[in-house]
Amino acid sequence: MNDIHIFLEQEHFIDTKPEGTYEIMQLGSQIMCGSQHDYDLQKADFVLVGCPEWSGVDKELGYGNSANLVREELYKMYYWHSNVKIADIGNVKQGATPKDTRYALLSVLQEIHTAGKISVLLGGGHDLMMQQYEVYKKAEKVAVATVADMLIDLDETEEINASGFLMDMLTSAPNFISHYSHIGFQSYYTHPQMLETLDKLRFDFYRLGKVRESIEEMEPVLRISNIFGLDMSVVRYGDSPANVQGSPNGLSGEEVCMLTKYAGMSDQLTSFGIFGYNEMNDSNNMTAKLIAQMLWYYIDGCHVRKIEARLVDTEEFISFNVIFSDVDTVFMKSKRTKRWWMGLPNGNFVPCSYNDYLIACRGDIPERWLREQERLA
Image (cartoon, rainbow, N blue to C red; front, top):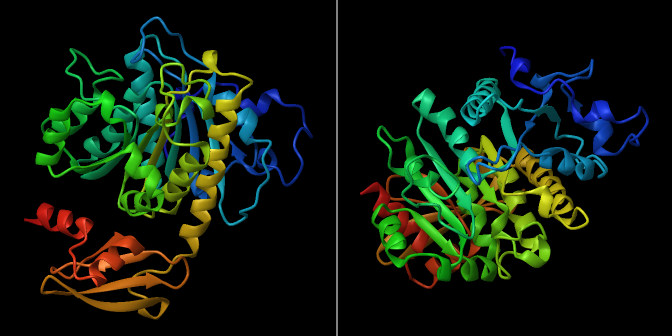
């Protein structure tokens, strides 16, 4: 791995803490930090990096300290998953211009990806998700992208920013997004024609009410995702007091933690970003605490992923033959994690939910199966 320290702040969060601050079983004693002598990125399952750059939201906002406030809460938590190894390389250094900062972030994310590690980004504005995508674009590799956000950021803007970055990510040529899913949008803030456009592109979108009704239906969505960007606006204001530009409605703290656990369970995910946390608006660091808990559940999901069997290990799965609408297919359930997969006519298996299996058993076509067939057509 190339030396990326030129792009990182010289002082790491851990350097500000006196020796002995954390107990041996707290994450602060277990996370491998970039400034420590025993730091070894190759041993890590995922790599934490901060980049609180806000110019894509408001050019007047400075470079924040949100990533370190999340670390303040995360490092206090207890380490329950000894088989999940975590590295924290610190924060990306602020460049002379926002463009320089984004270039530095991209360079760091590229090196993490090249090393075969998952990057977990504590960002500023949601437009920094473009750097997650640029890793795939530079390598000319297609990616499945998923966003959790109360808004669908498809505004037409002169330059890439937090309200319009999706327009560039989904429509620029050449394009390397093979599929896109949007979780938790709020209908009253969404233009109907925007949803029509996404539907014509065979993309999937799940309104807030649908997500809250069946949060477990989002696990198969994240299981196929390579890139996941979560904007804290998807969480209701009451559970995330920093969301002064958010909504009284949204996911609860428990529900957003389930989403991050599902992200950790995905063996396809290589880059996960959490955006939209402005510490200037936080009350008693409650949003920082919530994000730290989200990361704890992400680690919990990584633990589940590491114990999952491969689909070729057929003895680790229970198979169910089902016929619906003259289609004879197979559903498979993992004995280890209880997750489900369904077979397609081309012989491939795609992630699904228990509810998809129940729908098929009634003789109806699961919508997830139908959407997969549409995309293959």
